[in-house]
Length: 74
Image (cartoon, rainbow, N blue to C red; front, top):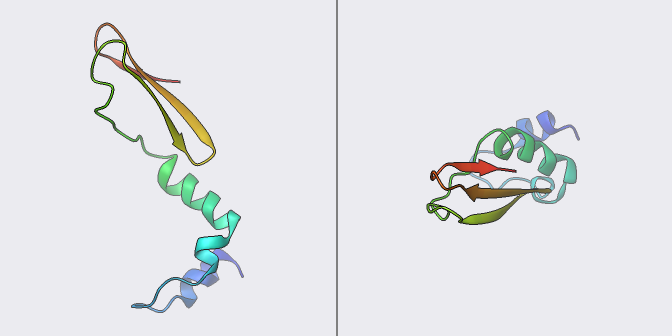
């Protein structure tokens, strides 16, 4: 069933249908529409030389803090 039809069939007050938790295509749409559009902020790289690898869906993002306390993402 198409995603729009699944959403339309959802009954308010009830848990989403199983397909919302198991369908790879719905998961990819969630990543694209919700996660990949927005930056994930972190205060764990507040000092020069700090770095962190964050996993967002199938993407890995390396966050680094330079000597001027500027955060860059790769």
